[in-house]
Structures are given as C-alpha cells and as structure tokens.
Amino acid sequence: SHELRTPLTIVKLYTDLLKRSANGSLQEDQVNYLEKIAKGSGELEEHIQKMISISEIQAGTLHLKQAEIPFTTFIRELANEWQPQIEAKEIFFAVQLPEVPLPVSADANRLHWAIANLLENALTYTAEKGSIQLTVHHDNEHVYLRVTDSGIGIAHADQPFIFERFFRAKNDMNYNERGIGLGLYIAREILQLHGGRLTMESKVGVGSTFTCTLPLIGETAVTKEPV
Ligand code: ADP
Image (cartoon, rainbow, N blue to C red; front, side):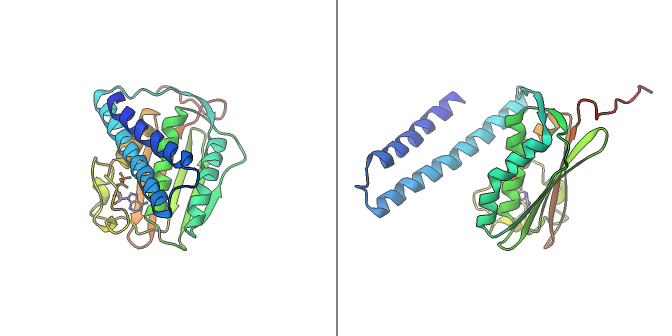
C-alpha cells in the first residue's frame, strides 16, 4: 500500500505547491488544469484506498481499532460535514437524532468511512430538489441508523447483488460514470466486523433506505441470559 500511496501523495503535494507558489501568475485555464489534476488524484486515492481495504478483508487483516464513542454525536458531526454538499445540490436534508448519546464500540475512522459512503451514494443517485433523511433510533440492544433518499432506486432484480464486489446496477450509469461498485461491499464488511449489519430496501423511482445496525454498549444495553 505504501508503493501505491507514495507516488500519489507526491502528485497531490506538488500540484498544490505549484498552485500556491504561482502567486496569481497562472492563467485561468492553467489553474483549471491543476484543479483537474487535483480532482483526478483525489479520486484515484479513493479507489486505491478501496482496493487496499478489499485485500485486507480477503486476507483477514482488516483489524478495527475500537473505542467507546457516543453514536449520536458521531452522526451529528458527520451530518454537519455533509450538509453543505447536499444543500449545494438543492437536496432537502433532514436529520433526526435522539437526545441520548448512545455509546457504541467503534473504529471511528472505519465507521465514518462506511457511513460517508452511504451518504455519498444517496447524494449521487438523488436528483436536485430531492431529499435525504438521516435518522437514528435505538432499542435496548442496538442503534439503528437509516439513510433514506428519494433517488433513482435499485431495481428488484439488482437488489440481491448490491453488496457484491464490483456490482453496479444498470440504472446508475448516467449518474455515476466513475463508480466501481466496491463501496457497499466494504461498508457492509466494516459493519459486520463491528458486530453489526447493513441492509437495504429500495424501489425504483421512489428511493432507497440503507440501515446500519450496531450493538449498544453500557447501561442501556440489556445482556441476554444464556438459554
Ligand atoms: P459505486 O462506487 O459504484 O457507487 P457502491 O458499492 O457504493 O459502488 O454501490 C454499488 C451500486 O449500487 C451502485 O453502482 C449503484 O448502482 C447502486 N446504489 C448504491 N447506492 C444507491 C442509492 N442510494 N440509490 C440508487 N442506487 C444505489
């Protein structure tokens, strides 16, 4: 992973340096070129990160660094990060969180990546003026995070394959030319490593709901007696 990442870091670093050191002496189209290089290398970095995660999953070396985190705060911060991008596309963004902190044991970086991936898909596959809802609720044992969009939806025939590696539904090609169909596979694996689940319900033309389930820890969680 070092061999893949280092050359890319150099491209990103020097693109940035070139732009900043030019001190206004670059023409508008030259600045444009640099921005294209920066965007392309950012996307390449995401693809590389996904390929690295896939090989870690297959080798069984994707290890979580878990710590107790308040799930409600975690989701509030994530929602705040995504709000500008979502609203920039004129998509109505509704966030419903409970008053309680809801402690979970999580690898914050990995979990952040998995949930951001769901939000990114919701944003990609929802047209302007649509809506995205982020809802958290809980019972005595689990927290549930629902990401609901009013996007293009996923055809019934495609639904069984949506969490498979490199799968891309047929209806998405006009929306996301660059997708490679790895995000959901990795996101589900991350949830499962946390002892949780990632499930989906969808209807073409109506929208999709992705639900993350995670075990609660602490006093709220009721430990089941062994049968
Ligand atoms: P990609 O990088 O292609 O988006 P994902 O694994 O994240 O890969 O998603 C796999 C496929 O599932 C996508 O190509 C798309 O067809 C479909 N998909 C995922 N999320 C949504 C959504 N919210 N609405 C409609 N289709 C979706």
